[in-house]
Image (cartoon, rainbow, N blue to C red; front, side):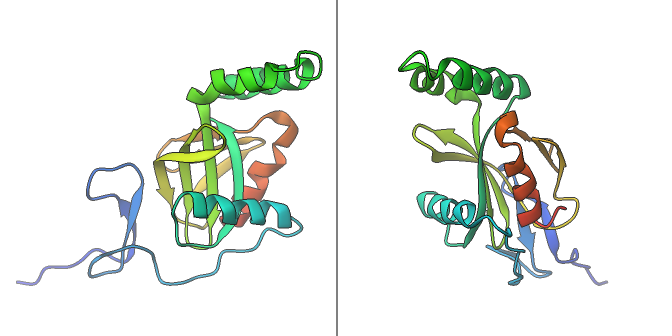
Amino acid sequence: MTSQQPAAGWYPDPSGRPGQQYWDGQQWVASPPAQSAPAVKGRKGLARMARRMAGRAGINEEGRAVAFSYSSGWAALLFGIAEEVAGETIPFLPLLLTIISFHWHRIVLVTDQRTYLFRAKMFHRPGAVLGTYPHGPGSMTRVRGKLTFADGQVAYHVPTFAWRMKAIAQAAGAE
């Protein structure tokens, strides 16, 4: 009697944590075999921010793209508009809105190996990892400024910067 191992690929984390882990066909490994994610063309600043964010998160991977987003479309719309409209007339309103809205803040980071979704902490610091996702088609879907990941987690960007979600999807090879 022989036992068959599952094929190499991404599977739900066997420890029960959110996200996925890579099975190489014999054992769980920290990362899949090296494959290069596509670079985000024309977005050098986005890649530079992503490299800094990977360092802040303690991830030993090359950051490719990053987006600071919200877990709710209504929060993205409400706080985004409030910061744009009232931010120039009321001096400390953007800071106050940032503090109030941190419950809904998310950070989406694409590295050369995978995509991470973090709960954000103050001053754009990555907090708890909410999900880890592979690159490639089907890893996420994008509709304008909304990303939906394979496990149902979502990230919304304010309408003004919805192009960042497109850059995230492209860097992850999902589009």
